[in-house]
Amino acid sequence: ERRRFMSGNVADIRSKPQEPPKPKRRGGGDDDEESAEFKKTLKEVLDFVIPNLGKQQRRQYEEQKIRALGGTLEKRPKMPYKLLQTVAKKSEEKRQRTLAEEKTLGISTSASAHRMGNAVDSLLRKKKQAEKDKRARREDRTYDLGMGAREKRGMAVI
Image (cartoon, rainbow, N blue to C red; front, side, top):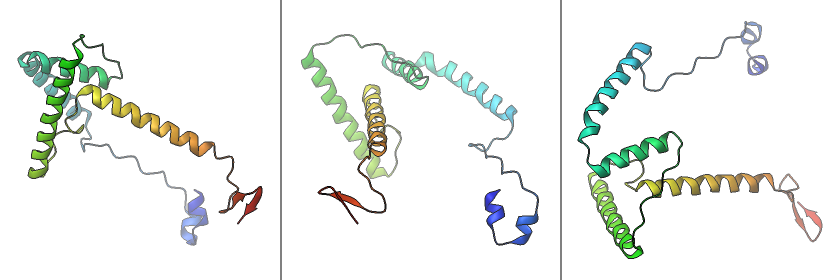
């Protein structure tokens, strides 16, 4: 409203206010019917695929679902540290090979760069904490004097 009033065009100032444009939906589908049909088809596909998954893939799918809903995962079974190190090293080597292959092909098939679920969680936690720290630093700028001025030996230097 203010922008319309402040514009130099008299026709804009005198005209009646226009309602803001409606936000466009992502995905392009406008009909609820299409959305319902898509959800139904997705459910059928998942019902068909999930029983055929292996044990590890099924557990990974379940954990992904829990994470997407904002839940926390249960702890993994205990294992010797040496074994844990070798498993982590092998999985990291496999991840690096996959990333190198994707780089040569010029594609990416994973949003999380093929990291394991716990690595994705820890990265998200670190990112959230960094944003929180940055916001706190920005709000805690008590020594800013404004207009490019800085404090030096108790005096404001411009």
